Amino acid sequence: MQKSIQLDRPESPRNDSNGTNHVHNQRIVETETADGFKKKEQSCFCLFVCLCFSSVFRFATCQIPTDLSIQVEDVTFHVHKYPLVSKCGYLRTVELPPPNSHLGYDLKLEKFPGGSETFEIILKFCYGLPISLNPDTVAATRCASEFLDMTEAMEDGNLIAKTEAFFTFVVLSSWNDTVTVLRSCEILSPWAENLQIVRRCCDSIISKISRGNSAEEMLIEENWWLKDVTTLHISHFLRIITALRAKEMKPEIIGSCIIRYGEKWLPSTDTKTEGTGKYGNRINDFQVMSGRKQETNIGQNKERRTIIESLVSILPPQKEAVPCKFLLWMLKKAIVYAASPVLVLELEKKIGMVLENASVNDLLIPTNSVGEQTIDSTEKQTMHNLEAVQRILDYFLIYEKQQLQQQGLKSTASNISKLVDSYLAEIASDPNVSIDKFQVLAESLPREARASHDGLYRAIDTYLQTHPSLSEHDRRRLCKIMDCGKFSLDACAHAAQNDRLPLRIVIQVLFSEQVKMKAAIQGKDYIASDDESDKESSQSPSKKEVKSLKEELEKIKIQMEELQRDYSELQHDYEKVNNKNRKTTWTFGWRKKKSALSDGKLDREVTEEGHYRSNVGCKAGSRRRQSIS
Image 1 (tube, rainbow, N blue to C red):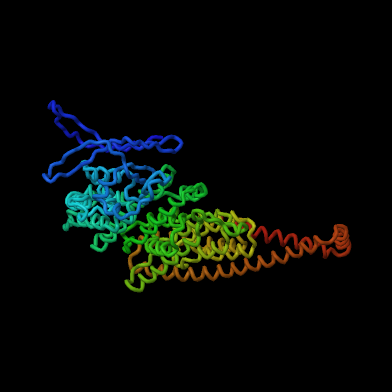
Image 2 (cartoon, rainbow, N blue to C red):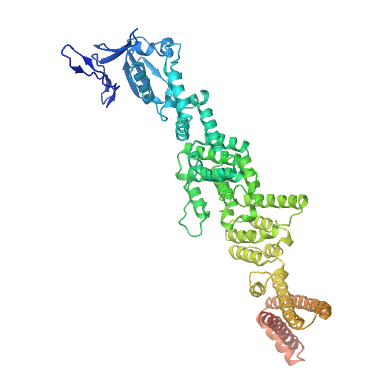
């Protein structure tokens, strides 16, 4: 393997005795063989640059062997000691190993800012060759000159002064150059921080962003800086956004910048899937979670975790600053990449303040984080994080209660009842969801928050269908959450024929269905008669209607008692039939025959029981069919 480091200088004419001009090119070459051994070339042509007292550069070419080898990263430079020592205070004080060292180099510069490319610029400057400073290299050159102690005490016009002047008067006056230098400082820590390069770049960017005072000017210039700022390192971005918040910039602008940064640096989502939003859906989140086993780059996961935690820490407190969709997207990423639990709870509180703007897909949060393994292999794990949603819902109710007490605003708990019911219907299809978690989440909302229980009935029915092994006690406990009086007619018709519901719930549904149908019919008759009456006459039918409804309720109570008696009689008859089935066939036949021959009492009892059971069954079946029809 061969490596060639060439230091070119511009052509310098030298007149010889014939009047012709000669051009001398200077090259420092270091050659390595394929097996890693170096070939030392003693005849190395080097160019010394001497500064005469007449302030005129004279170039003298001579064959002088190199007397110093310096290794930077994996590159070894064979140079002359005098040009470097005259400008670098570090090389004057460093102790060099003995000349017969077998290391292959005399000095190794560990953690040199900018690496071998920056050291090549230093060599050009030390040999008197012109160097071109630009925004891409000025920060690294400034840090490297500080590393080598190239101060004015060593020589006037040394490299520290030149790079400092270029950075101050050229770079900081330009927006693009300042952003470029700040990007280059990412690999120069801690030198760039200690030399205040990062701070001065951030201050320059902040002053340029906030220079517009009028609202119109800020509106026009709002988007031109967002794209550049989102390309910076997270530590630099955090410093700029924190300073802009201190200058009381609009929270909507701060939130927009945070959203752009998160979209750029965090894993993107699959937007081709049907039903996906701007920040992805449950399918992609589980793809991220399932791909964590293939994720071997621990450093990349740590960097993403740092980005998530930093973005959460600078979120504006205002509700309108960041949409709920982005907050839930960030929560999914925070759980997947195992962010700090304190910041996760803070993010959940912010989501609870704007929960009414969420959708069902946004609430489908993954359970595990990257690299997390289940401690107990026997414990079944759910697909979705129910605990996080439960905490978010609790934060919402607390925030809602505070708003009602302080400002007297109208409650928005009814707005999220459909959201919670839809979420329950989604998680009900997971066979690993326990009945306790499902019930606690379903009972989190107050009973008055749900105007209709159709969505809750659909969720419970899905859960019963997914968990057919539930005991009768668990079914009754789960169905007690529902209020059959808040079912629509369609829900009543479906529940009346649902075999998964307990019998007591079916009876309540039938009762509620009859009440609704009668109320609907009487309501139509009342509206038809009320259209032709005046205001005074319209009050009297309403009183009559109330009275008739009370009478109807009394009748319904009586019917309900009859239904309960029928139900108890059915249970009693069922127990009798079971007891008779335990006896042998010939004994039952003999008793039946004997009773027929003697007085027929037992025959009549059996027949009457059969007729009674069939009559009761027909009565209940006819009632159900009549209610359904």
